[in-house]
Length: 449
Image 1 (cartoon, one colour):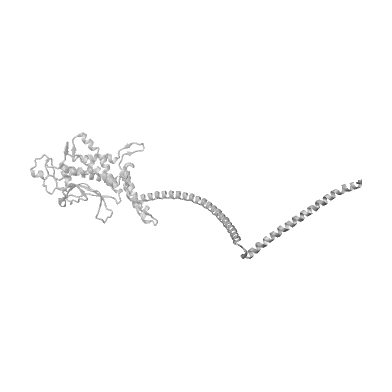
Image 2: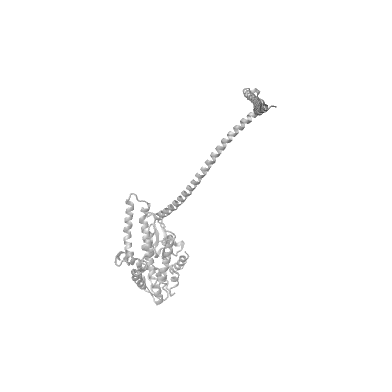
């Protein structure tokens, strides 16, 4: 082969290779196109078949119909599930919001309950204060309630009996003055050293002690004013309290917006003032230098009382006399406090009543010693201690009794008194005064209450 032929061959070989590759690519592309056209045709036929299947229900077999229903059900269920999930999410968020709202409301409720509790406590306090401001009942711890008043009256009666003494040993009785005192109380009795009833004389002197203290205290309240500020305070208060109470009563009744508390002020004022007087009236006085001394009224009057009672019965034993006379201070205080102060702490104001000689016995209003069968014919000889009572209705005949009157009955079957030395005849001995029985029975009753 010539050189030229070699050169031509060398230069044409690359071209031939490229043409071969182009041809091969063409063949392969044509094959792929044909294959793609076939697949496209098949797919087109499948689509047309499916379209025809839906357009002609009769061509749908049972399997295809079931598949379609399952697909539709699945899609529907998925849609419902998605909807429910959204609803649950919304509900969960709502519950969360409500929980926060409930927690907030619970806190509000707790705060309101606390406020309500405080308001209730405050209301109870005001109601209690209002009740205390409008009720006239005295508490259990009040010295002037009815129970303690009765107890103190019984204690005062015992003090009076001890102060008068038993008149039996080392005692000299002034029968002239005793008989005059019997006459004063309309008792038709005459006694002497031979014919006497010491128990009846003792009852007479107890009555006299009370009335003697009352008369002198009344004189003090009516006449002692501004003589000495500390010494006359009880008198000043007692004389001015009535005016103040009347002014408050007039004020409560004459003001259009007056309420129950205002209407109660006059009575509460009277109760409080006289309660203070009944607790501390005529107690020892403490001056500006904190030095304590006896109230001048007590200091002066106890001497008069001792002298007065000594004029009826003289105690011959100096020690006994000193011991007895020391009781005068407390007896004066208790009698004055009872009749001038303590009875005015009650609502309505408590009253007292002395029964007279020959009054009919009333077992409801009196206490003493008598036969129940003969009570209709029994009368009072002398009243030792008055009836203490209150009448809630001035027109009512039924009284509320604090303490029954202490009385000695009249012996209708006796014409004379027993001679103490026993020299009287047998008839006189049998006609002994019923007061002897009264003393023993009353002492038992008084201490058993």
